[in-house]
Amino acid sequence: MAGQPPLLKFEDFRTELDRFLQKFGAGGSNANNGQNGNRYNEDDDPYTGRRKGHTTIPKGDAAALHVARRLTFGATPALVAEISSKGIPAWIDEQLSPSSIDDSAMDAILSNFPGIDMTAAQLRLSTIRNEVTNNLAAATMARAVWSKRQLHELMVDFWTNHFNVDATNGLVKPLKPADDLSVIRVNALGKFSDILMAVTKSPSMLTFLNNAQSRADGTHVPNENHARELMELHSVGVASGYTEQDVARVAHILSGWTIAKTGTFTFDPSKHDLGPAVDGSPILGWIRDGQTGVAAGESFLNHLARHSDTADRIAYKLCIRFIGDYVTPSDTIVATVADAFLANDTQIAPTLRVLFQSNDFKASAGLKARRPFEFVAGTLRAAGVTFDATQAVPFKNVVNSRMNVLGQPLFAWSFPNGYADADYKWVTAGSILDRWNFARKVAVDGLALSMFDIDQILGTPVPTRVGAVIAKLANAVLSEPLDPAVYGYILDATDLDADMRWQPWYDARPLLAYILQSPQNQIR
Image (cartoon, rainbow, N blue to C red; front, top):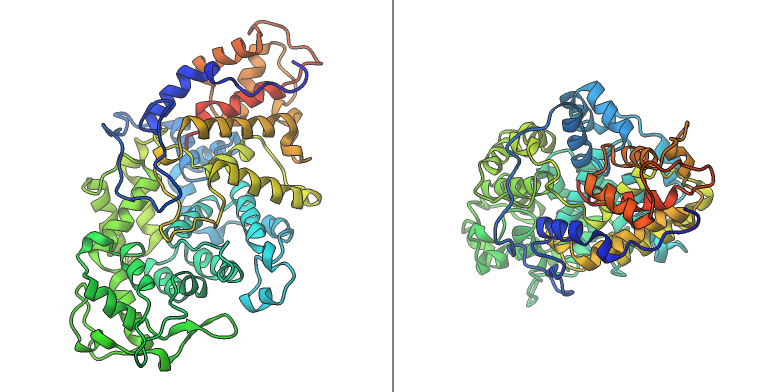
């Protein structure tokens, strides 16, 4: 039991791995994740038969564990106890009002990642400009691990992907921190109409989708990228029936929406022309009614935000995020959430409350796999990693390198549709082996950081038998007992017997590595 364990051999968990891949990866150990470096098809569905929610709804601590897993970046025993003590509805209400939660401890942590609160103008003159995306990614991981406003962080991630920009793009890079802070974070649990307006005016989006350089004056034809993605991805969706003529009209309506020298939004009337939109033809039911310039664009955005197709699309994406991939657009829960979205004038918090109160949500425990971001954050939370300011730079480097290996570097998806929210795109034999390797690095050497203490997890008194040590570690990091099959695999892999006496010189870290590699640490 001394030293480092080998990476868990593929055959050690072969049966459990194939079960996991069949459940979440739409195939066995040869499953393909559908990504080849190109923009994926959001309508692609490889499942031959969809999963369904459980027939029974968990109660008591099991219900609290489900909420902790699904509405945070990872359950801990203390968090499950807090949810049980406060009651699920009260805890959810608190999380839906993040300003009511004292999260001041995060200020000291975030101060270790310079540039994340700088404006574009400040960053352009700063020596850290080229490093700011890595700093922002590390700060985002830190928030996911240590913030008390967990649901807010999940929704920041949701909207970051819904309104994706590639912050590794040289022109976008100095603009993204302000976008993250003043557009996404401020509006993550507010009104969709507000976040849609803010994003459409955001310099990072105007740059990423080429609207900042677009002009319609004279013989210039405006770039249509922003107009197209505004409807296809940000609001109503491609099935809403808009036409190529509509795209051209919207591109003209948004002409002149650009960026001032200060790096903030401005309207340049010299680059604006209504073009084909001048005839006043309806666009998805919107009538221009003589408006032009910024007023016309804002009116159209407010119409899009409250369009029934937008409500349906946002509701469907929220259900996929918080219930599971087996939800279909025609399911009753999607219509229920869409109705709440419209009835509350696009307010996100009450819309989520309706979703979380549904039996569909309550019956979905264990039916959603973690994406790499959630897996890394959840594993660090489970292992009880604490932040050490002297290790901020190594933490940043380790986090960013690991996210690259796992295939989800933060703020680096190059297409406007954001990282996929589909289990099968992330759950493959190769990706699981990468996750096992990460879990081993966390457990055995603490990612070479001084932020991890196995003795704190094991606690005192230390159990006297090997089986009891495994059980205690599992409950500490999984917030529930270890699956009996996995328990058996661990004993076999380590040549230990459950009744063997635990000796003071034994190293518990290999056992923790196996537990963090288990399928129970792959679900949310």
